[in-house]
Image (cartoon, rainbow, N blue to C red):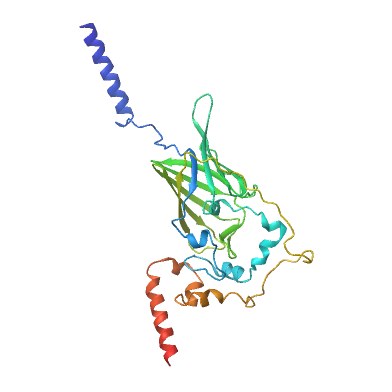
Length: 299
């Protein structure tokens, strides 16, 4: 009888705990362990990410007129300048390169609460901290860095990260940029040994709509390769005048027509980019432009 009494008490206490927790037996934060060494996959946008984008190709990007003008004036010789050769890719862009990615957790030694999730990218040997302890973002005038200031939270099994205070960096490596007012929202989603990274960049200066991209990584259990990125600036162009910055005046860039010549099936207006070119419906407009062009050539 005594054992039966205590059994009923224990069952009642267990039921009270379940009721208090909303019948959930999952932890408060349904977090997934993202830790490990991850290798980049290139299923999305391979030509842009590995061979590199062509000059004048702005297709599919929601750029503003200011961004388009900046890219039109950009010279690829600029990256031969010593101060540009080892310039780091900013956090919205760095995950799209041929990088190896390491992720690990930092926990409070006393409570074992998750304090931060750290990322190390082999590209430019960048360390990034995603704070998970609820700390606020710094004021607008605080230091901007290549990786920015990041805070994260778990939304179910998805790690959602919000980043501010990012330096100006690439949107596409042919002169298109985001400015230092841009913010980044990310989702890290793990499915077994595949990690999907979704980035959403909002930029009031150079993007008319948020720019959404995704890239995948595969868990590598046996990789012992080189995690360094030695980069040393040298004088690639001999005799360049001090203070000279390669550029083109508006309308004077002779290379902007190369993309149209190399890709005759892409109309010039489409290659100029803009938010409209992001959406599937734009294909109908491309067909109409191609038909009009063909009709004009027959005359």
